Each structure stands twice: as structure tokens, then as C-alpha cells.
Image (cartoon, rainbow, N blue to C red; front, side):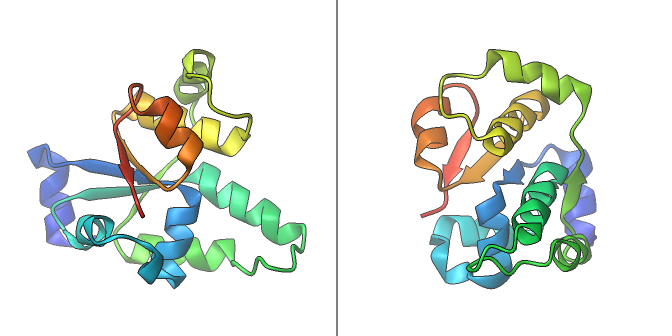
Length: 145
């Protein structure tokens, strides 16, 4: 982790949780992200988090051998850590937040990410229209396209 992120941890700078598709786009298709998100991801004064939930989602999709899905969860995790991203584990406190989620959709991974963002006070970077529409008053959201 670079010095900027270490300072951010103690200076109250903005903290962001990246939705699964945003992690994938940031790693392999950054052109899919808007300039605002690129600026956030490039700024060492921000703390960037990825969730163990996202890595689980990627590993499950990989194990299902989906023909259009070729993401190596281990390599992605190693790359995120090397780039200074912080891993956010799923805790019982996060799980308890699931009860209070606004109506959105039934995707368990998205629901867990929203609950983590709420419990930790993180800004969720996503392109998921359902999350943006239904959770914008519940958590802070940055749309990525």
C-alpha cells in the first residue's frame, strides 16, 4: 500500500467499495468506467475496498465454466492487494444489515455488498441500475458509467 492510502486511513478521506463488475472492469476494461470513477481509482488519498463477497461471486461463476467468463479470482485478488486495495470480509454485523435493505432485487451478492457498504459507511461504486434506483437514499453511491 502506498503512502497516500496509509495517510488516508488516518485522515478521514473518502472510502469506496467497488461492486464486482467494477473490479472486473477496473482490472481488464477500464474504458468502461467514466472519468469520475477513473479519477477516484487513481487518487491515492482514497481508500479502495474490494469485498470477499465479490471474489466469491467471481470464483463461483468461474467454477460454473460460463463460456463468456474468464476471470481468475486468485490472480484478481493478488492484483488488487498489490495495487493497495483493502479486502473487506463479510461479517455477522454485515449480515444483520440484510434485514433492513430497501427493495431492490434478489441477487444475494449485490445484497451483501449493499449491506457491507451500509454497515461500514462506504461509498459503493456500481453500474447496477437496480442498486442505483433503490438504494441511493440508503447508501452513498457513485455510478460508474
